[in-house]
Length: 293
Image (cartoon, rainbow, N blue to C red; front, side):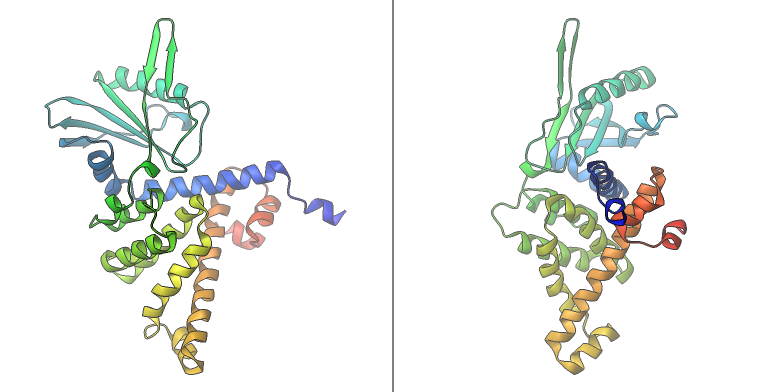
C-alpha cells in the first residue's frame, strides 16, 4: 500500500515539468529589463530611438498579462507597440493567444502592434504562428534563440544578458566551455558577491532547459577553485589536500543549489494549489519548509 502511495503518476510528472517551466520563465522575467534592449536590437533587428514601457495588465485575468509591452519609435520614425512573450515550452494555442493580445492592444492604444514570441527550448518550435482563414489573416514573429550565436550574449557587458547565452547556439563549442565563459563573465561583472551568487543560481535554474547539469557541475568546479582562500569550508579542505577540499566545496555548493531550487519549485507548486504531499514527493522538502514558503 505504501509503495502505491509513493508511485509518481504521469499527472505528477506533468505538474513537476510545469513547475520547472515556471521557474525558468520567472528567472528570465526577473532579468527582462536588462535583457530586452539587447534582444530587440541584436535579435529582432529594431533600432530604437525612444522607448516607453507600458502597463502589462490588459484585464484582471492571468491569461491577459503580456510578458513585455513597450511603445517605441524606431530609426525609421515609425511609432508602434512592441509585444514580446518568452516561451520555454511549446503552446498549441499560441496563435490564438497572440491574436487575442493583438486585438486588445490595438483597441487600448490605437497604434500598430509588432508581436514576437522568443522561444528558449530548441532550435525550432511547433507552435502555430499563422492564422489564414476567410476574412482573417494573422501572423506573429516566432524567434528561437538557438538560431543565434551565444557570442552575441557573451560579448555583452551586462551579466543578465550573458546568462541568455545558455539558450543560444554554441557554435560547435563544448557546452562546458560555454558555461565556464558565462560563469567567468557574471563573476567579473556581477558587482558584489551577493549578485554573483544570484547569477550563478539563476544559471543553475536556466540550464535545466538544455539538460546540462553535469556540464554545469564541471564548470562550477573551475570557478570554485578561486574561492578557496575566502571560504572557511575550503580552507579546511586545503589542510587535508587541495583536491579533496575543492571536491567537498563543489558538493556543498551543489547541495545548497539543489535545496534553493527545490524551494523555488515548491513555492510555484504551492501557488498552483497542489497538495503538500505531492510537493513533498517532488522536492523532498519537509512540511514545515513548505508551510514557511
